[in-house]
Every structure is written in C-alpha cells, then in structure tokens.
Image (cartoon, rainbow, N blue to C red; front, side, top):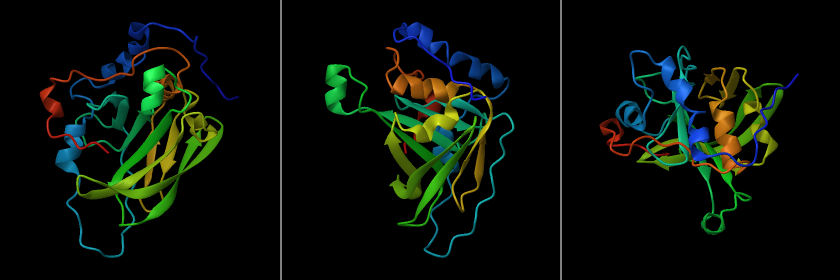
Length: 214
C-alpha cells in the first residue's frame, strides 16, 4: 500500500524546519554533502568522444541536505560530492502574490553528460514510477543532467512515501535514494500545501565557498 504523508495547510516555519533536522544525525563524523564538495570533485571536462557508461554511485549513509542555494536540497554521502539535487522554482509573479500554483520542481543528476544529449530519468519507488525528461545542461562550464516538471506532476509521486527509491539516467548509473521523507517534505512545501520557508543553511558557512549551483 502506498504511504502518503498528509500535511495541514498552515504550519509555522519552525515546524517545517524540524522536518530537515533529523537527517543531520545520520552523519556522526562527517558533515553532510555540500555544493562546495561538488565544486571540488566534479570531473574535469573531457574532449568530445563517445561516452562510457557510469557506474552507480554508492549509497551507504547517503542523505538529503540543504544547499547553500535557497529552495534547494542535495543528496549524497557525508563528506563526498553530491549525487543529485532538487530545486523548487517559483515564478516572480507567484512570489509577489504568495501563490505556489505554478511552482516547478527541477531535478539534477550530478554526472557528466554528452553535449546536446537527452534522456529520460526514471524514478521508481513507493508504488509509483515517474519519468522526467532530462537534458545535458551546462553548469560552470560542465554538462550535467537536468530536467524539470510542474511540482504538481504525478511524475514526482515516487517520493510520496518513506521507502527507498531509485533514480536512473541511461548511461549515468542508478542512484539509490535511501529511505526517508526529506525529499517528499520538500516537494510538499514546493507545492505550497502549507506556508513555511524552505530550508537553507547558514549563509556564512565557509564550506559553501566556491559553490557549483546546477
């Protein structure tokens, strides 16, 4: 049976932030993944050539963590480069009115992609299958996989539950997203199902220096 968390429409910002706090307890000795880790550890750009399929990255101990970019979370092993990211995008008009009706969720598979390449990213888990078109998108001079759909799209429903899910891009390996509700809570907030600030870390955190922000 699919498990879907139901939220009241109005909660305080402090209540929303408590949804994010437990993930930090999972990283006892190392800090959670940061954008700075990604900036340091992304492979150098390669000259054009046929791609070699990437191995699936390890998932032991991987967690979701707030990004230095507002309205964005990243996934990876503590102390290692992030593997994936989710970002909530609200049109300027909606920001002025306070509406979340037109919010978009952007998903990024942080792995090298061939120039002009396109693929379908498959999300599987919690009794659902979602497919999101992703394209090679240049970020800081490097092409990585990125795509977006309206936050209300049913393609995001694999996040709707506490079980482990997988995210697969052909040629870029399968990312195992460990059990938990952080990504679903983030999506619920993006959809505007209750009024709360999306999480972000301390802007003064030195670990965020030199971020790469896909």
